Length: 352
Image (cartoon, rainbow, N blue to C red; front, side, top):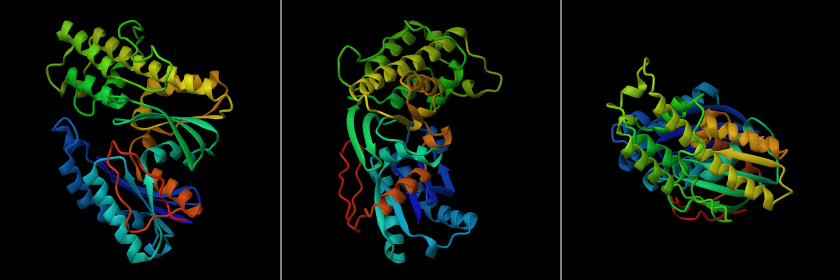
C-alpha cells in the first residue's frame, strides 16, 4: 500500500510517499527565513505560502520517486492541531486529490504522527510512554498501540519549545532561537542551581514553563551584558559567547530536560509494564534532551524510539507513515473532514 502524506500545520509545507512502512521520498519547504523577520510565524503569510508551494512540491515528489498519481492508494493530511488557515490549505488540497483520484482520505492527528514517525527507522514497540515536546505542545501519553493513545499530562501554559524561543528572544537571538541555545551551551557544564525546575512540587504529569521563563527574565535583567547587541551576532562564524552566556544556555537546557525527565519517570513508575519510551517533536532535536531521554531509557531498561533530528521537525513523512497505518486498519474520513486548530481536542471520528 502506498500513502501520500501532506503536512501544512504551521510553517513547513511538506509531502511524502510511504509504501509498506518505507519512505519512498519527501519534499519539504521551510518558511523559517520569511517569518524570522517578524520574530515568529505570521499565520496569514504561512497560509499563502502553503497555497503557493503545495502543487510544485507534489510535482517534484512524483518526479523524484517515479511514482504516478494512479499508483497512490490513499491520502493522509494533517488535520490538527495547528494554525487553522494553514491546515485548511493542506486539507483542501488533500480533499481535491482524494476526490479526483477516487481514493480514500485520512485526517491525521499531527501530534500522534510525531510520536510514531520513529517507526520509519526502527520497529514500533508497545506499550509505551510517549513524550511530545514542540513549540506549541508538551504532552505525555500512554501508548497501547498505534491506534490507542491516552493523554496523561500536558502543559498548562507555555510549552517547552515556546520557552526556548522566548528565552532566546530575551537574549536577542534570531528566530527560531532554540537551536542557538543548544549550540552555545554544547559541552558547557550547567549550573544546576541557577534556575528553578518548574512545577515539580506536585504529583501530576502536567507541565508549566512560564515560571522558568520569568526566572530567566529576572536573571537577564540583573545581567544585561548577556544580551547580544545584534541578532546577527550569534550567527557569525567567529562568534564565541561570553562564559556566563554559555553557562546560562547550558543551564536553561538542562533545567528543561531535567523537568521533562522527572515527569517521564513519574509516568513510567505508574505503568510498570511499559516496554518503550517515545520522544518526538521539534524540541526533541535538542542535544541535552536527547541525551537525558537516552539515559532514562537505559536506567529503566526500555527500548527508546527517538527519531533522527530531521524527522523531529514538522514533515510529510510522519503524516504518510501514520496515514498508511490508518489505511491498513480501514480508518478513513469523508469529504466533510474538519480541520482542528490548536487548543481544541481532535476527535477519533474515522469511518471504517
